[in-house]
Amino acid sequence: MQKRKKHLLGLAGLALVGAMTVAAYAMPTSEAAAVGNGAETKVTVSVGSEGQIPTVRIKSLKTDDVVVNKTFTVTIEYSKATRLAVFLQNMGPTLSAREGMSPSEGEVEVSLAGSSCENISFSTDLDTCEVTYNLPGNLASEYGVAFVTRAAAINGNSGDSRSDSDPVEFVYRAAKFSGNVTYEKGTEDPIVHIEMGDDVKNGQLVIFDKNGKPIF
Image 1 (cartoon, rainbow, N blue to C red):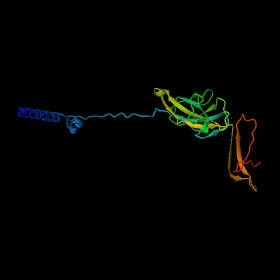
Image 2: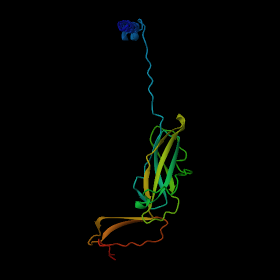
Image 3: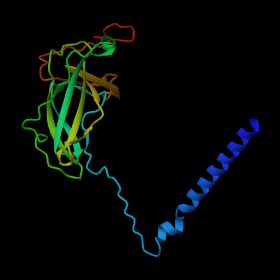
Image 4: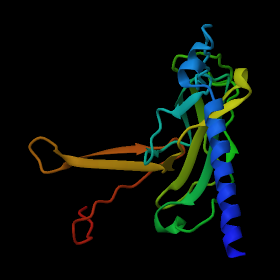
């Protein structure tokens, strides 16, 4: 009985090899497929393109920038778009005060009404437009208020294809100052540059020494 099983399996194996051989010989060779019995064969290749996908970025505002006015103008760079959208989110107080905090306000869409970004035309070249930001909410904070903004471009000519810019994180402060190692000629008084927002009525500058004592 055992011998018969081996014999049957052997016949099955031979039959399988025979079938594979027939299949192999039945397939046309590469030369035959190319020539096609002497007739010329044409091959058409279609290549997809991303030429209709729009691009967009916030050009004039950079991450870690500090603005001192609630209203300011931002430049948007775009191409291959028929419509733009700009979004803004208030992230709350800066520094450790905002670590782990939820945004104090949800993301809102910046109005493009009346701006050069409101009505744009499709173009494959890079173009720019300007939109005005009006920062919302009570922005009184010792260290400033953080915001995140992003832009989106839509190409309605290609089935509403869309692309988003990388988000930009910036800070609003009512005032900021910067100092450098430049001193007034003939003195040891450092030159300090101060910027104040439109809603600041007055301010007081106090300079401390390295021990935390007011100099004057």
